[in-house]
Length: 315
Image (cartoon, rainbow, N blue to C red; front, side, top):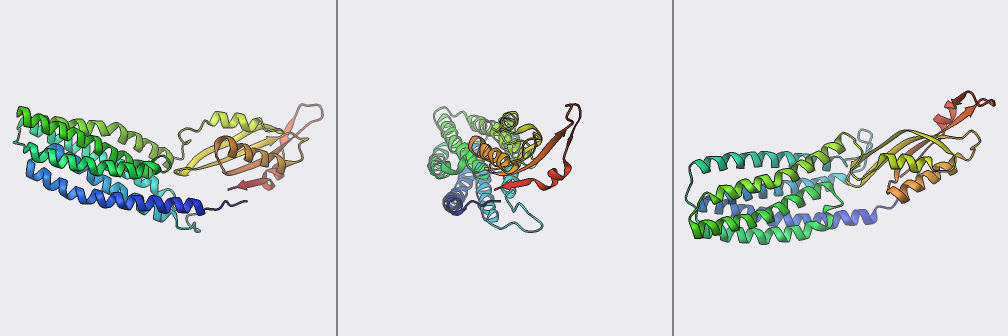
């Protein structure tokens, strides 16, 4: 078993956490301003954007907690540590966004039936300030969004808010120049419908990890094919690939070797190296089985003692 140094990984987590703290402070600060602005102007679109801001703040707070918990060492009860917390947090964020979207749709229906007066210039000013805050948040989170599922959830929400602010600005201008106050609930509905598909994608990805499904972007058939191509490997079975969390893919497999193959450590080492170089998978458990065949080539049987003794791990 080998252990790779984690100094660079920990440094990356520290920098990521610092950026998220900055974005969280900006988000919470503007959330208060936007809620006050929604009450003052009577704008549902601003309230919709404020609701998204709230889920942004929740996402960022949970992401920070997830980073802190992921640093805790594994123990006898949680041998893989706390990596799954970030996935649970991402699923919770998606669920919150679904609830917010449903509320906005209901409120928009009420306002379509009974339009309310809108303070369009105040609505425009708040939306412009919100766009500036969101763009800063998008810039800070972009570097970590592709490496961490939980940060990706927060990044998508902040990005949705940035586009949402543009929509609110457009709605404010329509109300100001035409007096058509139904533009406000229309913008609110468009914001809710825009974020729902992205929320579903985040929720689906989180559930796939929790169900220990094959991670997105991993071709199980191709892995099977490449393991069979290792010299000395006759067959592959019990192949399982799953993710502990973002960027933490694990693999287990049984490799059936030719009877004449005696250098089992070499075969296992080559298989591990192939998994690392071609698929980026380093957390593996490969078990060798030798197939003994009748000299006449009619009957074959697996050596159970080799099954038990030849498990090798690479981290």
